[in-house]
Length: 63
Image 1 (cartoon, rainbow, N blue to C red):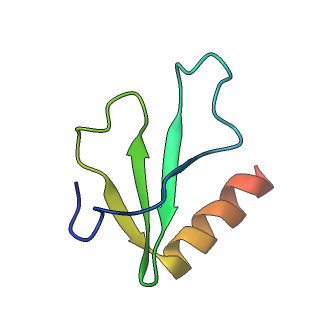
Image 2: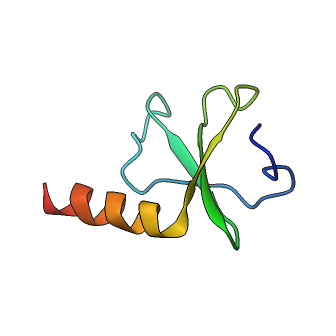
């Protein structure tokens, strides 16, 4: 996992498939938002700054 990702409270995206085959999980920390593939949590998560995450969500919701 990315640095500082241990012990985070992960939750699935509301846009993840109901069959569990295309799930993304996020965990919000003080300095960053962590993202991982819920199908394989042993793979490293990645982290993005909170402002970068806000920009991403704004872009995704506009499209």
